Amino acid sequence: MAQGYEFVYSDAVNRFYVSNEHAELKVHFSYPPCVWDDFVGYELQFLRERVQTAAQWMMASAMRFKDMGDTPAFEALMWRIFELAPTYEEVYWPLGAWLTGQGRRAEALAFYLRTVQYAPHNFYSHHNIGMLMRWEKRFEESEAAFKRMMVINPGFSEGRMNYGALLLALGRYEEGWALFESRYLVSEGEPLRMSHNAPFPRWAGESLEGKSIIIFREQGYGDEIMFARFAATLKARGASRVAILCQPAVKTLLQTVPGVDDVMSVDDMNDVWPLHDYWCYGQSLPSALGIRLNNLPAPIPYIAPQAISRMAWRARIATELPAQTLKIGIAWRGSPEHGNDHNRSLKNLAVLRPLWDVQGVSFISLQTGEAALEAQNPPADQPIVEWGSQLVDFADGAALVSELDLIISVDTAIVHVAGALGVPCWVMIPRIETDWRWLNDRDDSPWYPKGMRLFRQTTDSDWDDVLIDLKDALQALSSMACTSANVDETC
Picture 1: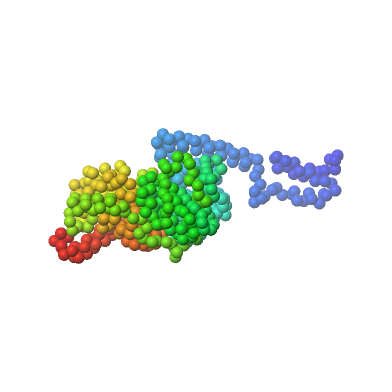
Picture 2: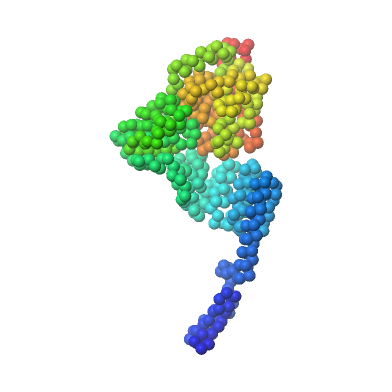
């Protein structure tokens, strides 16, 4: 050409020329670009864009099917999208979450394992593999998936929190607490939480000598009771004043915790912050205090029932329940707002029917909420005294629990009351989404070492195995009590 260049190659988008002064370079254009160099021709790119557009339209249709309640059509179309466009990542989470929500965890796991073959960079798929592996007790594979997630997106706060929960469940507290702190990271666009507006700094382990600190409530009633134990530890670290900000229902009970100088409920604040040097979430205290399994404070009891309430319940027990029987408090449902309530709670009171075969036992319902109505009209072969709906607050509940011989309950707040009091408590632990605090493959709890026993579900579908073990244990306890009291005729 006039400018001294020669045309050597076209890729259908660009034309390439080589200077006549460097004619030796022409040989490098003798072969077309290699697909292994991630070269994409126009035709292939055009096809990919068409497939992407088709997948988007199909996805919209699938979601409409779901909204209309036609779930078979929704699922069928979602699978079709994945088959036609396996690299279309927008289908990964909705389909995987659907399978998981239907209890089809094995299918969900197999699906997510396929997605990372097509999109190995998809950190959320690795996260979900980690979660599903954890529920299947495949802990090494779970951790490996979480580690891959962390490499791809180390700032993914939800994933860091869930990885931390895995490590806590395995008893690896040093690593677990650090990651678990991600549960309250504020992401871009997320509204600030109340505590982030506090006019004083968050405590992260600094010296507390002569300083005041307030422990903020978080999550459920059981969490507030469980982590209140650290007030005494803060005092031992030199804190001049320790306060607790809690929900109203636990205020009176937490006033009995050693080391606590002041307890206020969220209703007491009136949007005015009580001035302190530091604040800290209850569940963040173990991290800041360097808590491990070998130094976990468990000064049982660390709550106390009110004397007047305790005497009142003692009188009712004496007058309304048969003498010389074990007094067993039971709870079969937790809060329906809990994320894992469908796994941890029982369907109804009737599930516990095998326990009524044990002689020498009186059952007291500690159930609150709508489920308490079941105990007001129990099955004919399950006589039970319904006192749960009469409880004023958790202090009143602690007074009643302290007068009972044993608590049998699903994983809900009442087990923390019993555990903190040191009252014998048998806890029914779900196999799926087991809470990290109950660790793994053990029937005791280092958090409540006095009298707590864990009965772990071994299958996903029912509680039959747990009920067999509970019935046998209760029979042994009743027989022992009868023998000690020399009243074998009632057993």
